[in-house]
Image 1 (spheres, helix red, strand yellow):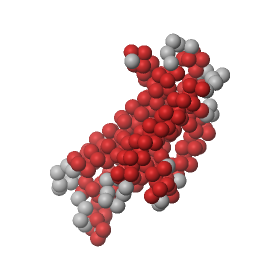
Image 2 (cartoon, rainbow, N blue to C red):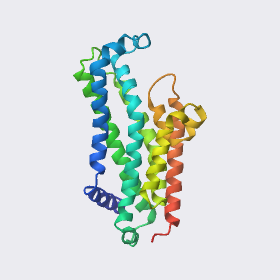
Image 3 (cartoon, helix red, strand yellow):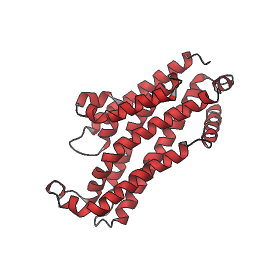
Image 4 (tube, helix red, strand yellow):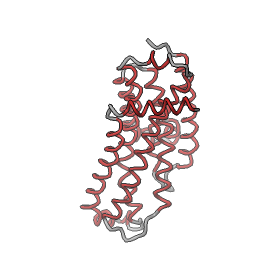
Length: 247
């Protein structure tokens, strides 16, 4: 366990020289800023629509923000995974890392943890910014903590499955442009996948669409399949990395 923490500390040290941290910070800031401006000018109009009159301000905020965030978050996860694994390819450092007296399993889990921890930071910062948006807009209702905590938890589950899948892809493909292209195609197609209940459960990119707490959305399916696929792709990634030849 001590070796794992040492590797993880080394991993975060290497990230200081990349744009991983700015990306994890700026993604929710960009989404939050756009949502704030959107509601600042259109809140009264949106609240006056027949379909929205029964919604609380916090529910309206979550729905409006989700339209943007369900695309931006998986894009962020895709880039994070590609960059974190490509750091070793670009510096030709895989041989040095694998020559250390540590197992490949720990090396892979360190990389995976680096991606997921950065994603957790992004998700949590997004939730904090949603709170700030509500206060800045002066919502009349008290904070809907249940809604925000559910939304945050669902995002962490969806990120778990996508991080595991995208980390696997980034570990087996040396060219980051290919792994990024796979991620971008997956994200751009997530709304199409989400139209089918079966596809939405089976495609990690579509899991982000299911993170909105709503009776019409299969949140229970997200929890089951998101966790299951996260574990499966994490195991596949570990097995593949153990067998992978590093040149």
